[in-house]
Length: 150
Image (tube, rainbow, N blue to C red):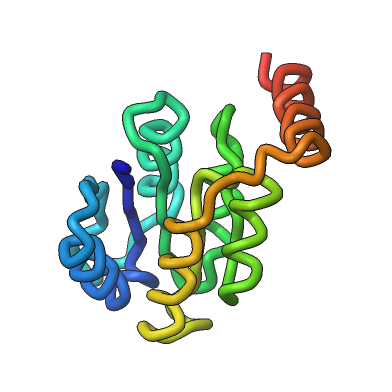
């Protein structure tokens, strides 16, 4: 599995914890930034992560900002992205299982490092169910994209 990661200044303190986790697990990743605490725009980091996942270069993405909201909104503007904004383990697991989410967005000002790692672990280690009803629903999302992303 290859993972694209990114954050803005609001997620800069949690990102090293994520990087350490990925390194310890032997998971290949690319860090798309930011690399400083200077104020920046979440869009500038959500977009390249989302584009890297949508292109198939990376299997999944993880984004961190202050709340996770801005990153998730921006990432979901990229065709082929199903970014889930999660702050609990159950939601992270279910979004993979039922929605085949390919990007996780979280907020540093909402969760701490321990919970973040549990959420990331659930997101990374849960596969899509491939149950007929969930496949049908994800296909409807894809059809909606085709209709609106011309």
